Length: 349
Image (tube, rainbow, N blue to C red; front, side):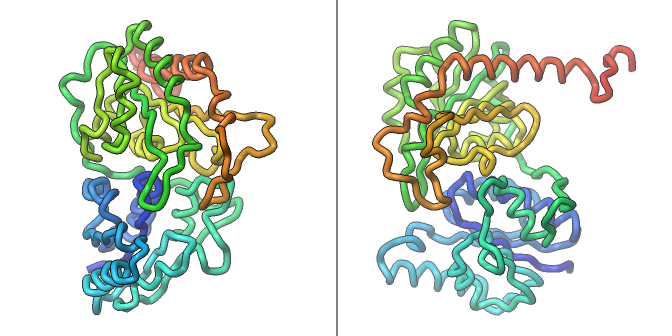
């Protein structure tokens, strides 16, 4: 058997999605490795379709982050029981808080790597995916390798109802996890409704997605012929819909990170959070950072937001601007489908 590695990443769906490329980086260096991932219950369905994970160890994040000492102890003890006596060549703790290392106390390991050793991280201004890759590669600086295999996921096939007209996904909710709700990141719901209205007028099919906790937002679209998937999909099913869509529009929430995994064209909207840290640099992805000129932007320190009474930065992003970026993305996608990478028309090959 090859080397054994343990990844500890327990955060929200978006955080876990940004860490998934670590798997390709490990496989690139250790093709026969056995990889275990310690995760929370919420993102577990996403990791279950990752081909490079050999084993999932799932912890109850509600207990782990709860106020009750008994609940926290119960969650930690359950992990210790799972990992007891195991041997790992390396453990990667994908959190700045070094207390996550407590979860591995019952296992033996040659080395443990975390952001808390030597240099705090992920560093502000860098996309978190590259910071997770740094844990695996131990490389940094101008010559660090940023090329790594794409995530290998068993994405569900395209739904039968997604055909003919262009499909654009909008995600008006989100911005919450087991520990807090970050409503400051959200683009105003009335902007999403106007965007949906105009897309439908242009002949596009609009799909509204979100978690069950976003159910109250569907009322805003009740007079529009949208496809309402709020709370109606599993994580893998949602990923399949995203992979089949022509474009996605979302503020800074987990959907932008899921979209990056399947490389669907994306318009991502930012305000309080730094765009460079959360918008993966790839083709067919536009980032719009609202609030230019505001002295308070960004107001997110990696853990908390400033107590702001009104997210003017997000309000400043116009529907016209978002529509123009969607149009540019769709036009670029059409060109990409017709022209090969070397610029030669397919008919001439």
